[in-house]
Amino acid sequence: MADRIEKIRKLELVKRSLALRHKLKVHDSTKAPDNHEELAALTLSRWELEDELRAIEELLLSDRTRNVDGKKGILTRDKMHQPPPRDIRDLSEHSPKH
Image 1: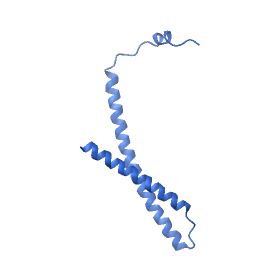
Image 2 (image 1 turned 135 degrees about the vertical axis):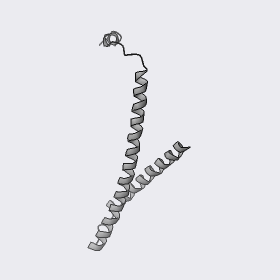
Image 3 (image 1 turned 90 degrees about the horizontal axis):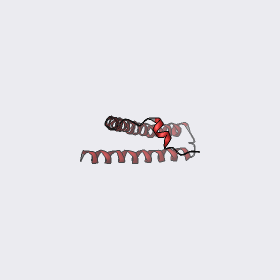
């Protein structure tokens, strides 16, 4: 159950990051403000979007790092239980000739 909740949370974060990216593109495509007050307000609103996007990206990156570490651990444990690799000379006998 906790895994399902975590997956839903990650999906929501990804959706939010996509929405924020879209909003930033809209900001980029809008006409430049006519005065400094409007430019300041636009700049602050852009920074808010960028900051939220960065926070989401950092959360997702940290989750992915934990996931990769877990998968490395699984692969390392599996590798320890595998038979040792064959000698390279054995492999070359079965490779296609050019």
